[in-house]
Length: 459
Ligand code: SAJ
Image 1: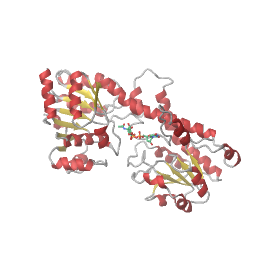
Image 2: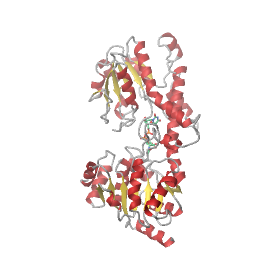
Image 3: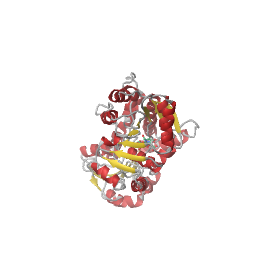
Image 4: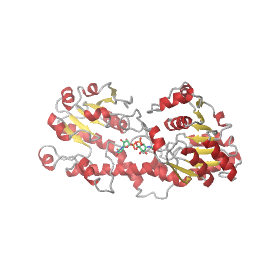
């Protein structure tokens, strides 16, 4: 047995192992390109022919920093290719699964893509193969779903005849390649042999590998994004407290974070993207803690922030004698966060839709993202703001961090309102230029609130 494992590890070290990656999203393709770059023969499998054709032409179908060069170089060198069918799983030594694991409309994990991929893997599984799951999954998925399925389809025993590990990804869009290499990588085997072999494989690309077991790795992965979601929910609730008490959340967080063991995240118009909106539900799936579950409460708080932005807009317009109905509203930022083209679960979607349902005219602009969620599409910042009553900032994109407030004011209608969802505008400066300013977590000083701008109360 030991000699068998040593041979597999030697094949990894000499780059003789053949790798197949199932799923060619931004994680799968980044994984494939990086393993090809360190010398492995890599085949990436996808169900979409346009993705396969693109990769084989040396063109990355995904807009990810540095990926294009990696794909081109390794396709040209014959180290990386893409195929449509699952036939590629035959005669492979390592199969890495990186397919989507979404949640359904009831917030329950939908593991159908993973199970389908595993069926094709299981039917062709051979002795000494290593199967690695990278997709984010609920706790005990490897023990209770993946292992039994592969064993029954292949007739082989996990950690003895073949090897199985959970190796979650923790890369962020825009910095996927750097983070793949630099971030410590959790490697959780179904048994010690699997952990050892998978660890050796990932050490060829990742600077640091941390070995554990599959279930611990599953919980740690979902805990990371859940921690961020809960922390952001705390920041959002703190923002509402500041609004009601005439304090500035930006200052409060800055001060609280000078405590050496405090790290409060940033409040905002809501939490978007495919990770933080999903992973908390994977973590708590089938948990017995149904009531007073901080994780569910945090999700609810974060989801409620988009409605808070709309309420803030309505109140602000009312303060200047305008009605949201027939007001023209400029939206800056439709991606789920700054400087990316991804609009999945973006808070701007529900904000635009609620404003439209209330009779507002909306126009949206994002430097990288083409989604507008039903708003009119503008091609530039100045086109967006022209003739509008209100400007809502929803991402802190680089372009929005240096807004020329004087110029913007000239293009907007009288008594222009600005709603700063990301707290990137200086409130005093905006008011000096002539804006009616409201920002998430920015409570008007009490004397102001009593005299000129009544304190807003969003409960
Ligand atoms: N957000 C806040 N306040 C914050 C930070 C984020 O409201 O303090 C909002 C963002 O605006 C966005 C959402 O939360 O709408 C998600 O932001 P994110 O920075 O966590 O971005 P993601 O979803 O791209 O998260 C990825 C994660 N990667 C994976 O799951 C593989 C996450 O683990 C990383 O921590 C994060 O990138 C990162 O560090 O960039």
